[in-house]
Length: 575
Image (cartoon, rainbow, N blue to C red; front, top):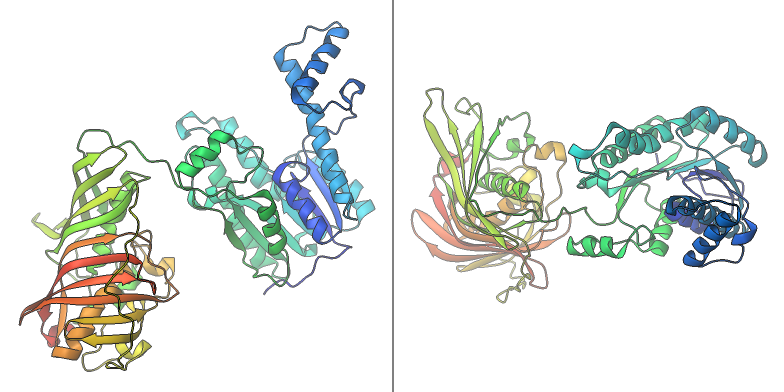
């Protein structure tokens, strides 16, 4: 059910953390769009401005006056004493400015000094104000704390400080305000909860609980517009010059305050798409790890089953589910990338299918991914020799796949495919699902690997197809999730050789070796892209081809060169 309730002058919002910082700016923007009533919650006390501080707006001058006032009272001022009084004055000023800015729009605003983790005081103070404002119709939960440290340095107190403000704060708000009376519930979460971030394990946990809470509350109260906004970094006072520089180096975008505040307003508009969880901002990419000088080796073990990997039912040969070679490559790529965050897969050499993995009685209890570093240069690249192997009940080792994977710190610019040809010759007239219908030489792939829209043109030397791969669920992807490398789209791209063989030679094939492949950009899904298959050689037993995945302007996402395929008997392919 989609919430359609419009905010109106009688709407009453409780906003935790709403008197200062980013949450205050969002509240002001909301009041400008639709003046209503706001109850702002914050831990800071609202104090009367001391006489000595009036009209003193410069930080240095204000601190000087604080020192002079302390001395005049016979005190010996310390930096800590001065800073404490300075914080009280500037905090009160910010709260008063927020209240004034809200009321300047024609809206009404009340401020309550209370800690949202204190259930008793929160309930008591809220009830007193609600008697003036009327029943609360919306909550914006923006309160939060930080205690950034590496996990081994975090204390129990650090965790409690961060966790309770987010999670206990939400529970307390919902214990004071019945969820069934709410028309809007907005939770300020973070991309840290969605992507993770170094030094913020507690913050990530707390925000991910907010994300899951949003989904649960929406299920229980479908009449309420519930949204958890996973914010990225804001260009605010907390965003220091040093932090900005670090974000830029990591490729993390920063949200301008005006734009971010408007995005909150958009999320509360009934005409806007009502998603229960949205991400606004860039992924929290970790800084590049140091490669060191020693060439290391790693072993990653995995137990693979059909139950855990439903997509395998869409890749069966002779009635038996078979692991696609592109999924094996994806495991290799992801395994390498996880070792060195900040480095990304660029190329793969000599990928070989040595012995396929079939999901029948021969399936091993576990498979092992071996990664051996063969070359690296810190801040530049690292190269791995990779192998996937297993052992049978007798202890005999079987090697299934091997390759040489290269990760780089900086991706090169995506090249342009100069030989692109998108003209249509209507030689192959099948479209969409017709490519995968049973019978004849149709493709055997199930929905997880389907995506042909149409063949644009085909000659004895080349075939170009328009494709659109529809994203499958995380559950369907199982142990082979789409990340930078998309094994389902790469498999789809190689099916162009199958189509070419079907049409010109009435034959089929299976992959043998991907001599060289590289990726410059993530291949988009749910929107069209193009695959150009260049035939380099064809014999009775095999074929060699290039596969170029590109957009309509010729920009190359990914390409495979000199791929070798084995011509296969039809009876071995058909189910």
